[in-house]
Image 1 (spheres, helix red, strand yellow):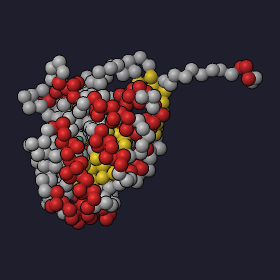
Image 2 (cartoon, protein in one colour):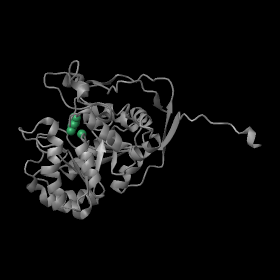
Image 3 (cartoon, protein in one colour):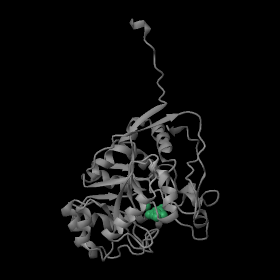
Amino acid sequence: MGRTDCVIQPLMTDQITLRRPDDWHLHLRDGAMLAAVLPETTRHFARAIIMPNLVPPVLTGADAAAYKARIMAVMPARADFTPLMTLYLTEETDADDVAAAHASGLISAMKLYPAGATTNSASGVADFDKVRGVLERMAEIGLPLCVHGEVTDADIDIFDRESVFIDRVLDPIRRKTPDLRVVMEHITTSDAVDYVKAANNNLAATITTHHLIINRNDILVGGIKPHYYCLPVAKRESHRLALRSAATSADARFFLGTDSAPHTDPNKLSACGCAGCFTAPNTMPILAHVFEDETALERLEGFTSLHGPAFYGLPVNEATLTLTKGTPAPLPEKLITAEGEVTVFDPGFDLLWQVAP
Ligand code: DOR
Ligand code: ZN
């Protein structure tokens, strides 16, 4: 074929294929809710770090083994999905039990909830000195700590709780235990972005889908929007922009943890509504939209599929996921479960990207 025969390809990208993504922070719940929400994750994701804040919490290796068995019992027939289990760190956690659960490959991380910080965190840690022994053992065996990074002191404004946590709790822990590998989860502030960037490779952060989309005005202006309420609560616009910039920067210390957290509508739409956005069904189309907006579509795979495995020392997935861009695809607004309806996160724009079947 002569040079004049060549076909000029349009510059617009309307298809992208990625290694199959993983979700490094996910709430699957239990019972009927677990059975209803699990397929929403296994449809697109290969692995997920499973949060242990059940009632009662997943405290021991035996609890994690039993919870994993309950997840596997309702696994959709053709799913190729691995739940990565975690234990809920308390002041009573037994370091030997943790080490055994890690050595057997059962758990991938410990989860630190400051007591009272969020949903089902009552058994969390109030005195961080009381978990020093476990943290030191984790540093020794290379087991990562996933952190809900908010202080709970009544005198600290809710919008400042993440940055105060970094100064008062996280930084002292990291200084005393420099070999501990830490994931600061669902970061919501430029302070957290800066803190992670300034640290070494023992610190990483997950970013949720919804914190890339909403700021605090979206929750409060023009009437309260309970479906946008989550913890840590979304902050002002400058923080959202810092998160977008970190997520799309190709810096391997930032990766996806959706924090998809289903609650039934009656539990969200109450005088004391629960925190959580349910993003499992539409996370990948939303992220394609965000990364395209930031002219960073080629970096989406790093955020969803490469950086997380690198931090956790796991192989990347061999299977792929393809997204195509076309006409807006309506997604179901609600997931019907035996416990009640769960509203799917509404990004407030048409989703032109869809996951190819
Ligand atoms: O919004 C949230 N929901 N944040 C959390 O930390 C917990 C989660 C849940 O379990 O509902
Ligand atoms: Zn969470």
